[in-house]
Length: 63
Image (cartoon, rainbow, N blue to C red; front, side, top):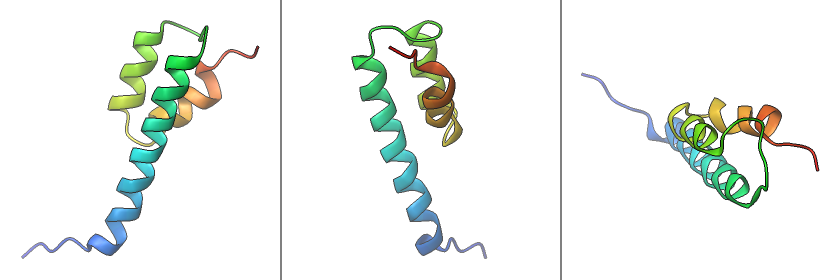
């Protein structure tokens, strides 16, 4: 019987959601990104925790 320990999983899920929402808002506000915005939106959404981190490291253009 597989039992999920939700007290360990929920902080990771919440962290993922916070990172994803913050990265999506930042991407929408950003005037220009390194690469097309639609690509970064897909990366942020579909590459769980690492997508938003990649966006903040690589995707944002310095003003």
